[in-house]
Amino acid sequence: MKCCPSCHALLSGDNVCAACGYHADTLDGLELFAPEAVYAGTGFDPRLYRELATLEDGNFWFRARNRLIVDVMRRHCPRIRSYLELGCGTGHVLRAIATAFPAARLSGSELFIEGLAFTRQRLPDAHLMQMDATGIPFMDEYDAIGAFDVIEHIKDDERVLAEIHRALKPGGHVILTVPQHPWLWSHQDEMARHERRYRVGEPERKLRAAGFKLVYSTSFVTILLPLLILSRRLMRPTADDPLHEMRIGRITNAVLGALLKFEFLLLRCGLRPRVGGSRLLVATKEA
Image (cartoon, rainbow, N blue to C red):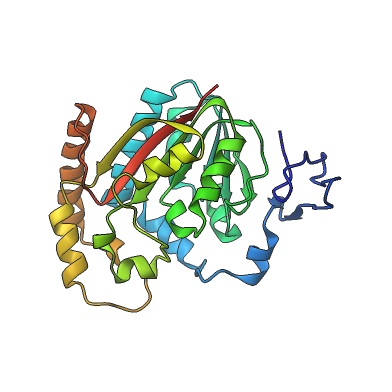
């Protein structure tokens, strides 16, 4: 069910709320549920999407994260019929999920419409929306919702989790990835506009507080943690360029990718490391 992101009353077919007067705008065929972000800007340079769309397909980290996300979704929510990704960016993850779950009805949302232009090219049949994750205009709508390296950018992450809980059907799943360990905080986090890196156990506590039952949780990018520590400690601050770490040589990219493939096999065998550059979590809204 589609509901008002402001007061949570049901929206009419033309996205008007009879209770509070809210209505969603449209632009180039996209529903705009947070138009103030479109017109006012938020401190992120949307021009980066073009280069990001080029880099992420071949980058070892994006490929490893996609592999892990798809694997845990196949294991923990294999029969999803409807899926929403928050902060889908250029559609890199959403495209992988479309391949893994070809029968699912896919939706993607992004605060910045510039990113949705690339998602539309990659997934012309997906339902795409501009929205703020702190105001999801749905109730009991989706079998699964994903947010991959998204909620660390949002000051009120607990509100986002509550919104996800409301938008999921009973028995639905949320899948999250977040950066972890505050002691890894560096200039790179500041350039990426992070609000936080999560402490061990923090995202699990916040999921439970939002009403979820935890299903799966693990660190990843563990095998590369020594290199990550060195890079964060030794790297000199550069210009405000959040894509700096992604521009690496072909050989380095291949070696790091091979190491993360080996780590993936360890995770598939049941390894659950407590430390690592990122954390992956799956939780369910109990029926």
